[in-house]
Length: 215
View (spheres, one colour):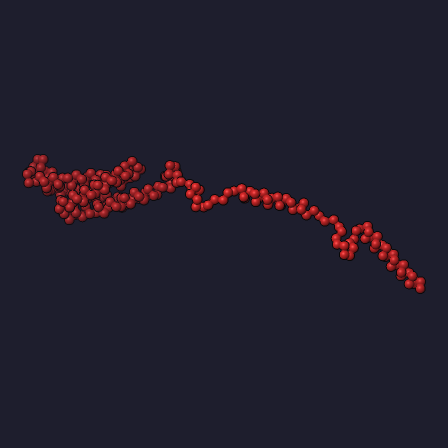
C-alpha cells in the first residue's frame, strides 16, 4: 500500500513539473497549433520585390523598335571622306577596272586589222569607235584620282596617236591620185604609212599589256 501511494506521488510531481514547464515555455497544446513567434517574412523579401519592380519599370520605359523600320535605318554617310575612301574605294576601283577591260577587245581588233593589212574603211571605223570609247572614259575619270593611273595616261596617248594615223590614212586615200610623194606629199607615201602603222601596232600591244596588269 505504501508503494502504491509512493508511485502516485511521483507521478503527480512529474505532471506538475510538466505543466509548469509548458506554462513557462509556452509549449504547444495538442490541437492548438504553433503558438511561438514567426519571423516577418515580407520584411526579408521586400527589397527583392522592389528591385524586380524597378527592373520591370525600367524595361517598360524602353519603347520597342521594329528592326525593319525605315525610321531606324541610318543613311549611307557618302559625304564622310573616311567612308568614301575606305568603304567605297574598292567599288570605285572595280568600276574603273571594268571600264578598262571593256576597251581591251577594241584594241585587239585594231591590232589584228593592222597585222592583217585590212582596208582603210574598216580600220578607220574601229579606230573611230575606240576614240569615242576613250573620250567617254576620259570624261568619266578626268577629275578623279584614276586619272593619275598609268593605264589612264597610256589610253589618252594612244587615243591621240590612233586618231592621227586614221586621219593620215584617210587623207592618203583621198589625195594620193593628185599628189607626188616628194615634198609635202611624203607623209602619204605608202612606206611612211606602213611605218606609222607599225609604230601604232607596237604601242597598242604595250597598252594592252598595261591594261591587263591594271589593278
